[in-house]
Length: 493
Image (cartoon, rainbow, N blue to C red):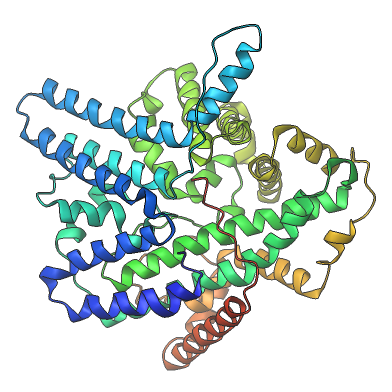
């Protein structure tokens, strides 16, 4: 079950919300846990026991850490907990990949051969594993107290808005909300608005452009032309942003409906002028998690220049592998790590002093090159695709399969996507005078845009926003009812 499905929108969500607010405060966490487990079991019933065991194990580890009186004993318990969590993730996600590469490296001249069955990847295992590690590390660091009830632990790990696609919530950021929270009509309505617009991002933009990207990336390398290759990577660049940020918006909106406030996950990354800035804006919860729980423990910025560079490279190599067990993801992470190391040198200072447009062009070129490896089915195909982008392809024009999507809808969606990828497009959806919730963007707008937005404050703006919500929801409902292309691109996470 995913957010952009009819069963979720018209059955699961209304029933869950209705019962949640019909129950007393004491029973609401229990119902949230039950609903979240039903949500997960709908698509992955065979792995429900794995999640329950993860919840129980990490809850016990947290209690043991808090119980231990001596720091050395606490560290031993923490190490056991982290190792078990990581080993479970490695077994389900990376065992077949590692064994296959080991066998290929050893070749046929050696009798030693690893036989590993390829497991079906539990959906969201990377997310709930990182949540578990965050919990026990935060308890160890005394940044939050261990939960006394396994029920509340279950709510943190399995809360369905962020269970299968994030954002990754550090335990100390939400610990108080698990125990004590309330809601208001204003927060609830803000959640509805955020959810609907996130749904629109996914269904009306990402899905449309995803069809084009799929067709281009399915084209044999020998038939790729430069225009087709650039069209494919442009559509995928927009697809992955609106799909991922759309899911994050839906998660944040859903959480607000239940009284939670999750951290922001995207802040208009495609306006960045450096790869450093891109990672401050892209998948913020993941980069923050790696910073707090890996980069800083490795020494962070406090070590020598060579050590800092090595730390960055290792962190982003692991960040790439987190997304999937393939060399493509490993290279994507290493590529971004190498760029970040490069930008810590004199090149970074030159980039900071360059014209804004030049910095933006460089950043988007690097990001799009990275997306080729992220999207391609194999490393060799990614190299061929890059060659085609820069004139080395043997194809001419567009294949008939791609040509089917060269229409006004695709062109309009690309233009709309490029517009909505900037903060200016949200000017009319913000309440500049009375902001009470975290904004989708902290990017300042020009004074002229702010004053224009101010002119639409009050009742007229409210009607415009209500109309926009109704229109977006109606269009999304029509698309979903038609059973159109609606992929779930996080199955490898």
